[in-house]
Every structure is written in structure tokens, then in C-alpha cells.
Length: 403
Ligand code: PLP
Image 1 (cartoon, rainbow, N blue to C red):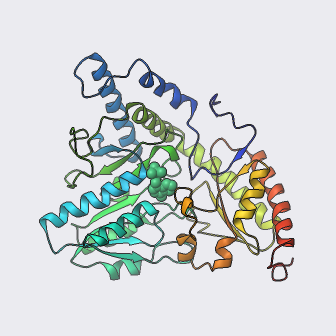
Image 2 (image 1 turned 90 degrees about the vertical axis):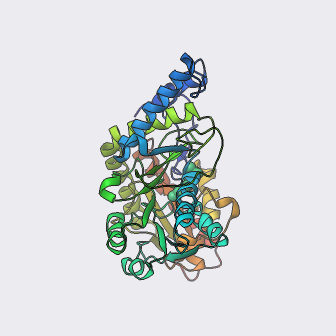
Image 3 (image 1 turned 30 degrees about the vertical axis):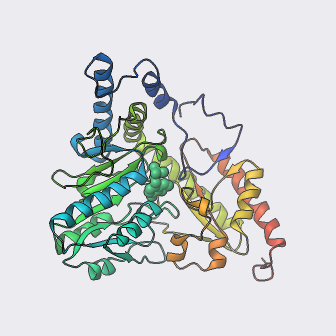
């Protein structure tokens, strides 16, 4: 693993990689010239501008290679949220403008807020949205998808992997159901959490649009991409100088795009080793928690799970209290989606897989990264066991969950 001189974490054990990841040194090295002497605007036709333009072209090729698309099918955005907004609003509005009766969108109940809030916004704009249920493992029910499809359906958006419980959806099978019903329906997938953890091939998945975010894969924040298959039309959300083929205006975030491109190249290069390594750490953590800490429950599918996701409910314990205790010991985890925890609402994902209030409040997510090692996991297990036992002793539910 390459040492990162900017990554001095003072011995903290960072287990919140689903929220964000440290930028790798080789990525920082590649970005620095574009923060310094290579500052030209890629739209300028002088030497500096051309250098920035070429850097973007290289990055576009690297992003495309990661998901097996053409470079011309990649549109750079400010991150996963914008990519999801652009896919849903841009594609749905473009289709409805031409075919007025089409106004139906299908998504799942466990999507990230970037999708769910966008759908809510589209509902205010006259679209109908169906929210598919998931089973107890967090997998979308295929029969439900079949039932929901109508002649008014424009787009189906199902995430490739969930940010809270790490469940990987059978996207290929779901897109096949949609194709068999009507080839014109657009299939979008939010692959923000999946990229860099599992292989993504847009042709094999048979998706028309796919969202990516750089900061979840050891790249910089504030940059991402939307893949849109050739010939699928969409409207821009941001109008202006006509960058990104007029579909996403604004002077490009050149250093961010360069860093994201490098992150994609590295992800592809190291995917097999990294995902095997993270699976090893993940399975070790799951196994030891199961053996050593009573009254626990693993949330999400064990089989169809991201290599870096562990989400446990510790019954009788308050997850936020536990997080604070772990933080005091230098272990950084999360109770759910960091991108929306400012609102401190109950997890819609855990609710959708059938957890009750008590189970949801005792839940905690550990999301592992390539910088973690087995010592981090061993220390986490020791501290976790101590803290869960302590919290259970003072819990109002202690009688119920006595060992
Ligand atoms: N989609 C998923 C599944 C996510 O997990 C996140 C962030 O956590 C996003 C979208 C939003 O991505 P960004 O933070 O790049 O806006």
C-alpha cells in the first residue's frame, strides 16, 4: 500500500470509507500540477488551455475504461448527487417533453437520498414514482418490478450497491426484466458505492446510465461522472458555456477530474487484490463479532455484499452512544449514511429490510478501506466488545438482552 504523507491520522482507525476515503498519494501527485502551473482553462485555445483539455481527455478515457464504456459516454459532474439528479431529471424530462403520456419512474425504497429526494422533486413536477420493496436481505423483489412496469414507465433506477448495508443488487437480471417489457425504458444505476469494490461493466449490466463519485474511491471530493449510453438523450441541469457537449456547463474542475481519472485507473489496476483484501478483513470482523459479542444481528445479505461493508445491530445498545465510545478510543465508524446524517432521521434502509425502532437504533456501520489492516480490526473487536458490554449494563433494555 502506498504511504500517504497527507494522511497522518494519528493512529486513528478509520472505518467509515462509505462516507469518504483518503486521497491516495499517487493521485495527489498527479493532481498537483493542475493546482499549480498547469492552471489553464480547458476552453482556452492557447498552450495552457490545451494541456488542461488533454488532461480531461485522458481522465475521461480512464473513467470509461473502469466501466467498459466509450469515453464519449462519460459526463463529468460535481459528484454522485449531481450525477443522480442529472440522470433522473435530465432523462425523464427529455422523454416527457416528446411523449407527454410518459411520466412514470420506478426506483427502490433503499436508494440514497440523492435518488429519493430527486424522485420526490419529480413527483411535484407531475411524475409518478413507484418505490420497490426489498426483502429482509435488502434485495429488490423481481416480481415487484414486473408488476410495477406500465406503458407510462420512462425510467427505472436501482442502485448497484447500498451505502448502508452493502447489498449488491442483481442489476443484470433487473434490466433484463425491463428490456423484456419495453426496450425504450431507460435503466439507471447508482454505482457510487460499488465502484472500486466490485467489477462494473455497463455492457454486461445492460444499463443506460450509471452514476459514479470520486471521493468514495480514494479520489478527491467534488467530482464524479454520469455515464449515459450513446443515443440516450437528456437535458442539462446547468446551462452556460456549453462544456461537456453542452450537457453540463461550467469551467471544468480540472485537478478534480485528473484525480478522479487516476482513481479510476488505480481502481482497475488493483481491483482484484483490493477487493480480496477487503473481503478478508470484512469476514474476519463479521466472524469475530459473531463469536464474541452476544445479541448481535448482521444487517444485509452475507452473500451479495460489498467487500468493505459490515453493518451490525447490537440489541439493547444505542448505536450513537456506541459510536461516541468508539470515537473516544480512536475508532471512527458510522450509524448510517454520512451524507444525510445531518438530519438524524431513522434509517429508511434498515426500516425497509424490516428492522424495528429498537433494532435500528442499535445499528452501526463499519466500512473498510485498503489502508486498514488486521490489527485495526482486532483492536476494533476488543474495544467493541468492552463498550457494548458497558452500554448494555446501563441500558433500559438490559433485562431483555442479558447474556
Ligand atoms: N449515492 C450513493 C449510493 C452514496 O452513497 C452517495 C454518498 O454517500 C451518493 C450517491 C452521493 O455522492 P456524493 O457524495 O459524491 O454527492
